[in-house]
Length: 559
Image 1 (tube, one colour):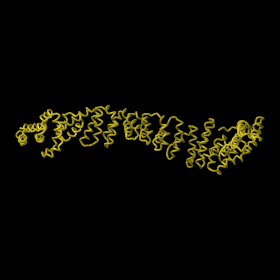
Image 2 (cartoon, rainbow, N blue to C red; image 1 turned 90 degrees about the vertical axis):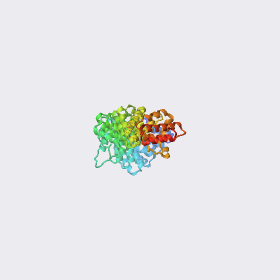
Image 3 (cartoon, rainbow, N blue to C red; image 1 turned 180 degrees about the vertical axis):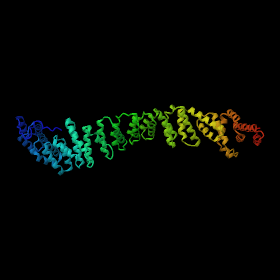
Image 4 (cartoon, helix red, strand yellow; image 1 turned 60 degrees about the vertical axis):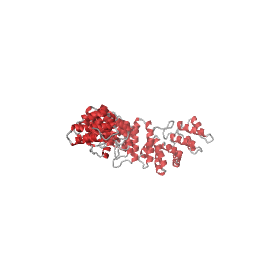
């Protein structure tokens, strides 16, 4: 925005004579020359000629040229040469609008104080579109008066006028000298820092912030920081944050607090520029608690930045915040949080603790699946903790046992099988047969389950059976089906098991023998029944059951 006179122009009020070359070029403006020649002549005169009455008259005539291209070029030349006597005609063109109206506004704005004042007086009288073009022309004219008028246009009631003036001023800033930039910043800071009782209109405040951002003046920082917080509009807060992001520099505690609040804002227009600033901020250990709220921010990008910044700090607070990310719908976020939890000692503890405290089956499954890649690194004590809770759930009939057992199976399937079998045998020895059955049935789901476990399952089933000798009841008893299956696959082992299973009472053996002794068509099952009845006689020879067993053996021809 150069405020010096145009090249080749003399000082105001001082006449200048055209040289021979300029006079020859001036003749080329005559209507009998081709259009392109007239356009070129106007262009050259605007760049090299001095102000002269003859030139002013010729360019004035060119304003009425039949060719719109020549008229536009003549308007450009009049503005560059600052020929004030044609100002009334220029203002008429401004009022008419169109491309010539825009060019005329630029020409008038270059005519110094007189042209600027005339445009300001014209603005209330024209349509909104023209007012915006006039504001843009004032901002790009390059004179002190026009710049002042453009700054005044920033306070206009029409947001379109404000935006046009601001955009044009911003486009001129890269061409300003350092001193000029500083002077412009002074005026903008003064506008932005006016009394709070009479604040700038929203559009004007936004425009000033945008211009200060383009000027990159550190003196505006306090005013910009004030505008990063509510109740300012999201658009203004975002603009202030963008301006602050360009300036860089160290941030104080209060500034960081404001940035954290902006990053956690539900409006991404505010969160995004705050995020860009926070990316460059180093994290000190004592500042970790200040970053934690970002892990609950509405936007995924903010949460991911927080993970990047504090995900490596091994603390219970960080682990708990990371754990919450596992319920987020974004898969990338879940993966990053889980990777951090896996690296942290407190993270692994938090995962286990959360699984142990899961309130629902679905939550337990989510946490269990998240730990499938980690469970092999858990210590024996941690696995025991999981197994203890799984057993408690299993015995209570709680389906949350399934995800825990799934996770332990992922760690070491053989170890889990051995621990469950030990628990089942311990319960059976304590005569808690129904609970032991819970473990034995679980073990029997495995096709590779051993015959010994299946025999324990059949035996415990026999202990809890109703021992109803009615044919219908026996047909529906699962333990009898299990014995039938075992006798066909492991006859010798099953008979040996019955002889050693002292915990099976004569009543249990009588029921078993009574059922299978009747299987006339199946030699193995009939033999099982006979052996069971003989064990009744052997273990309780003088009891009524022994008498009934002998009678059954006799009736079935097994004595």
